[in-house]
Length: 121
Figure 1 (cartoon, rainbow, N blue to C red):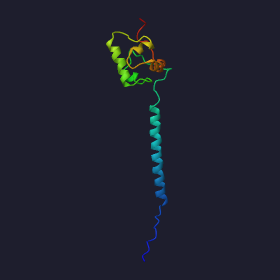
Figure 2 (figure 1 turned 90 degrees about the horizontal axis):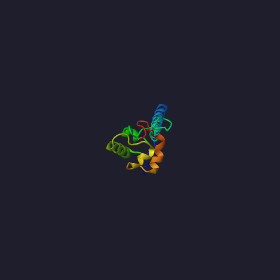
Figure 3 (figure 1 turned 30 degrees about the vertical axis):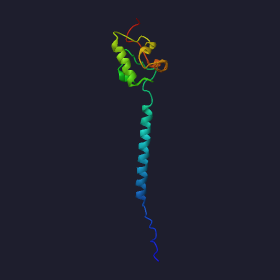
Figure 4 (figure 1 turned 135 degrees about the horizontal axis):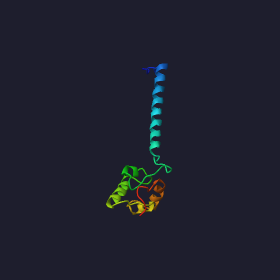
């Protein structure tokens, strides 16, 4: 009867172990760095104490940074503004006339708005 060969244990020297640990730590560091970047992107870059965004002059990309406002609604604000002559938005409530902006959205963006590009009608 034939007997199977004994299991052979390979020896890993200390240098190999250190390289494996270094690679594992590098991968962990990369994962943590990516998670940090993703977390930073989820924070709104607009802070209410700052000057805010004037919907009469802001670009769509600036408007899209507002909470509850995406690219589509930002472009709708621009289109609404361009269809009318002069200053369109004198107060936050004027934005309710733009398709895609309702009371909930208005409440979210109001602290981030300013209306100093034109005087009251």
